[in-house]
Image 1: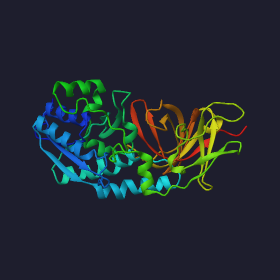
Image 2: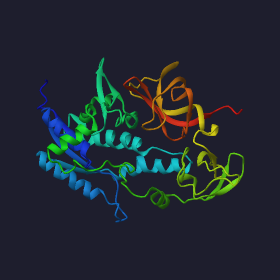
Image 3: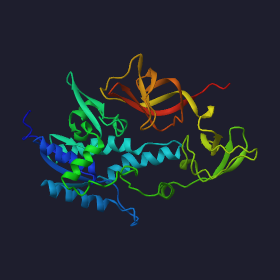
Image 4: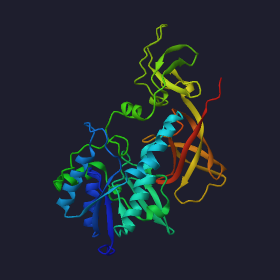
Length: 370
């Protein structure tokens, strides 16, 4: 084993079990380990949502137990400028963004990476993401995490091979139950802490209330695919394609009790279009156009590529053909139609275990009208 004792790793400590165990595993591998807790959101509501203080206390308790130093840094300004404002812009435009992807791109693997290297003298940073890294022909590749159920490569597709080369992902080689077991054996305070599901750093607050504080909601009509008005929505931003819950409409008077699904958002006219049945043709797409591309090897795609794609997290891989339109736009055609392809979300491409990169879905290509 190579001598890691001279190498300094700064672990992004979130106060969760994955980063806690990551710090321990790196210690076991002989690295000089320190922790860094990032404060990326200024709590301004003083409500029960305030998880940041509890997370910091948990991160501190873990670092004390492992005997490592914990630094703190405030990236709230960077988060607001580079993540949150873009997030609001996308919602305003009727799209559904993925803030976790933006946060990884702008905060965890940019602001944090730079701070760790320049201010703390780090050789590497480490996070608790379930991904793996492989170094091939002098370039680092991003691989899916070993635990297929927890794999987080979808959220990290914007990383370049240079960023991956400076990053370590210790839990990516493990399955989640093993990670919990290690934490329990070490008696870490985070061993039984549940995984966070809130938006990146904004915590577990009620999303609709939260969004409503920053964007004025514009109520409008809910219309069926046949053009019948059957209700009112409270704002297009609260709805996403394929959504079933929270529409506030029942079956039709003709008697069909099939649930309603959002199949389209007419942003120009502020109309929410719905249909009955989760596999309604209006919800299906034969492909998509993606832009704002990031290829991990940073080589633009030329010609065509056969690979698989995910259009949302934890989706089964979809075989597809990708054709370059230019350096920053691609046309993606699925082998089989796919439901609920959502503009603003990310399409992420794979070749086997390797995450090739991805882009933002600009438009979906609907099934041809029959």
